[in-house]
Length: 81
Image 1 (spheres, rainbow, N blue to C red):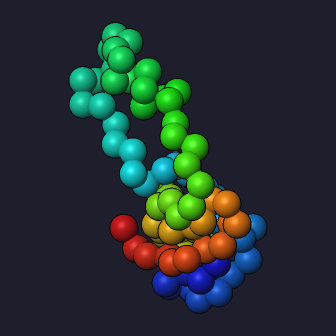
Image 2 (cartoon, rainbow, N blue to C red):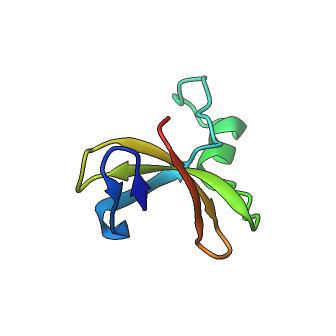
């Protein structure tokens, strides 16, 4: 993966964290609501490009937004959030 700070690095230096398109519900989560159930459990498993948050844990410790084709695992772009 090509880190904007460190240049090309092995994938073992990075950690996938979550889908970048999701946003947390704003109701605080004190009681289960349909919004929280959907956020935690319901995922659309669509093929093709997807934006994801990754963390460069063994390098510069930057958070990155990686656009990756989930069908082929090809990395299309790496950007800073």
